[in-house]
Structure formats: C-alpha cells, structure tokens
Length: 149
Ligand SMILES: [Fe+2]
Ligand SMILES: [Fe+2]
Image (cartoon, rainbow, N blue to C red; front, side, top):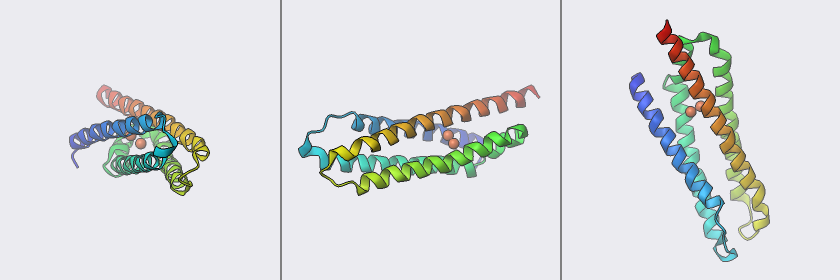
C-alpha cells in the first residue's frame, strides 16, 4: 500500500474507533431498567465486538501496512518505542478479549457482576488513548526529523 493510502486509511480507522468508543461509552452510561438488561447487554456485547474488529484491523495496518516500519526507517533510534507500541497492541487486544469473554460469560440477570467489566473497558479506553497519543508523537517526531534532514 502507498504511504499516502496508509495515511488516509489510518485516519478513517481512527474515526471508526472514535465512533465505536462513543457508542460503547453511551451504552455504559445508560441507566438500564432490569427488564431491559438482557437486550442492553447484547447490544453492548456486539458494540464491543465491532470495536474489537476495528481495533484489530487498525493494529494490522500499523504493523503490516508499514507505518511502524516507516517510523523506524526515518528514525531508527525509536526502535524501543516501536517495540513497546507493538507489545501494547498485544496487551490491549488481550484485555479487550477478556472483557468480551467476561461479558459473554456473565449471567444475564445479574447486574452486580457488571461494574468490574465496565471499569476494565474504561481503563482500556484510557490506555488506548495514551497508546494513540504516543504513536502520533512518534510519527510527528519522525516526520520532523525526516524533513529537517
Ligand atoms: Fe498502535
Ligand atoms: Fe494507532
């Protein structure tokens, strides 16, 4: 893929992820009457699955579309940061998978089991936000250094 295409695709993916996070956050902050809990839970489960799919495609593009390797080409001194970002992809993916499994395994009628899952998802969003911020800093630094020669 051309690097310009990758840039466009990355921007589209960031927008999709932002929309997924918005949907999930809205679902998490909803006051749900007990009677609606099963359908709400299913809606949340599917929203998390959509998010997981988009997130994995985003990681694939960063790892295989050349974004992380092009940072290394321009700024090889950042190889530790790049390794760390790739390791974070694995951690974030595992944490999201776990949250989905927990939600899936939760008995439909027991709302009290829910708060830890919500906390895990919210923590995951924070971590992803930090991860994305580190990435864009790295990208900017690499570009600035590239342009500056
Ligand atoms: Fe990433
Ligand atoms: Fe990213």
